[in-house]
Amino acid sequence: MAGMPVFGPDGEQIGKVRDLVAALRIGTQPPRVLGLVVELAIRQRIFVPMLRITSIDPGAVALATGTVSLRRFSQRPNEALVIGEILDARVGMAAGGTGVVVDAGVEQIRTRDWVIGKLAVRQRTGRLGRRGPVQVLGWDEVTGLTLAEMSAGGQGAEQLLAVFEGMRAVEVANAMRELPPKRRQEVADAFDDDRLADVLEELSEDEQAELLGHLDEERAADVLEAMNPDDAADLLGELPQPDQERLLGLMAPEESAPVRRLLTYSADTAGGLMTPEPVVLAPDATVAEALARVRNPDLTPALASMVFACRPPTSTPTGRYLGCAHLQRLLREPPSELVAGILDVELARLAPDATLTEVTRYFAAYDLVCAPIVDSEDHLVGAVSVDDVLDAALPDDWRQRGSADLTGPDWLKPVPRG
Image (cartoon, rainbow, N blue to C red; front, side, top):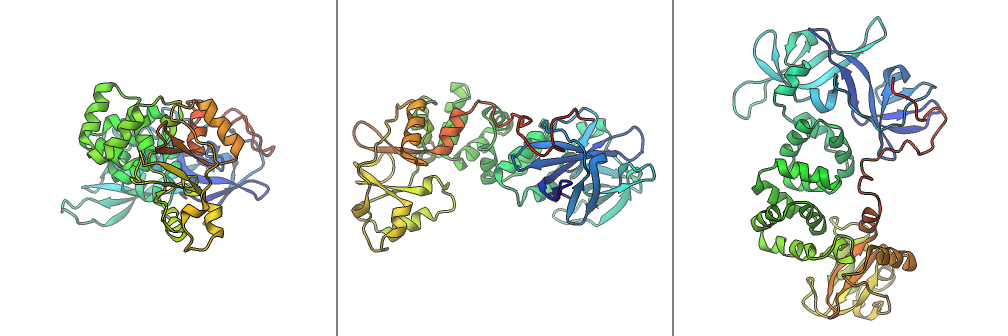
């Protein structure tokens, strides 16, 4: 069901299934499924009770007419997330041995309640690197899934990582935000450095600091190296000075140098918002070279919208700044044309100490999504993109805020969760 589309009573898709919420019971009774965690198009995760579901087909979930709360989903103490907490859990098997839960079967019983009646468990063989057979067992045939046992035991992350595989970093960040702290840490341990860096960039600074503090310092430094320098600087800026210096010292010098430069600027200035890695070319570069550079999939659309021409060196801080070329202009020129011949030399520049208000006015005035940051000696020191400006202009907790004030269909409006 992970990722399955959810349709409202009018046939319009409202979101996707991200998890199931189950109430664990005393003894061996199978847990009752209370509802679904559905992620709306606005990235808000809400709770949809099973009573509101009319059908669960192989390709979709359909909702009945009625009201559903738009309040952000919040897990209650006696609840467990099926994907987030039950998958990958280590369990004992009544017939002997131990295993790992790799799937769960949800079924409707005579009382019309939905329960987790069966679990697919991969047996642990004890042989390094060998995967054991999968058995389908009844809930009462396994041990280790009471609330007390789950909070005390360890959990892998193989199945959850498989669920996250096709999701964007922002979607994974939203999912991790809903997990218990212990589970978040287990998932962070299982991610490779690049994937964890991408996800950290989508979390709030407090959440970033929490996960970074969980990692050992060597790995924390590796993850900081994999992050964009401006995001790494923002995260380090939240840490005490001794912790900053210790982590910067563990990073490779070529990776820590731009981060150190960014930390010298106030966070609410153009210098504090910029990235030190825009697309910079020598003036004798051709349009074909410029277009090849902006095709880099690691560039954000905002940074790919503009290239900058400078005298050597072309790494920031560069030699004398000459001007910029907009992507639309590059697309209209012959590939052999020199970038120097199509530069916009009239576009105003931002100083590193420009305030957030000044930066915001600049973007509003020039209708741009990227802007050059040039120091008093005419060196390009970086570029600021509109997404970083929005991030700074919004309230600090904008990532965690609910969206209950957004309008929607009459059947989808704020009501108390039942």
